[in-house]
Length: 145
Image (cartoon, rainbow, N blue to C red):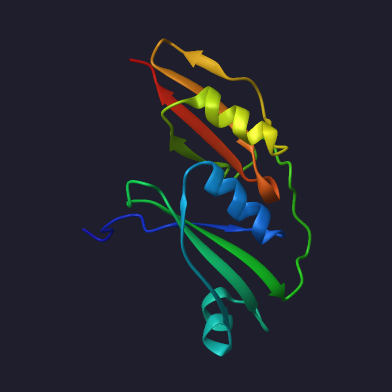
C-alpha cells in the first residue's frame, strides 16, 4: 500500500493571526510555527523566491493537522476568496464537533458567517458550512444520537 495516512491539509492565508484564531476557536491546538525559504523550497513548490511563515494546528485527537501558510514572496496572483461549493478542486474540510450551535455562535461572535444554513440532515447529523479566513470553507458536523 502506498499511502500510510493523511498527514495534513495546507491552507494559504493572507492574515496568519486571524487564521490561527479561527482554527483555535474550532478547538485545534497550535503545534509549531516556523518559516521556510531557499532553493530546496523553490524546487519543491515550483516557484522562485519563496519565503513563507507557517503554523501547524492539530486536532484534539492528535490525528489531523492543518498547515497554515502565509507567503511573503512571490506575490499572490489572483484567486477567488468566495468561490462557490461547486467550484472544481478542494472546496472544504470537515471537523466533527460536540456542540455545533456553540461552535457556530463562537465563530459568529468573531465575525465569521455561515455559507448556508445549519440543518439536521436525515436525523443523522447537524451540518453547516462556515467560511473562514482566505475563503476556506469548513464543514462542521455533529452526530445526532
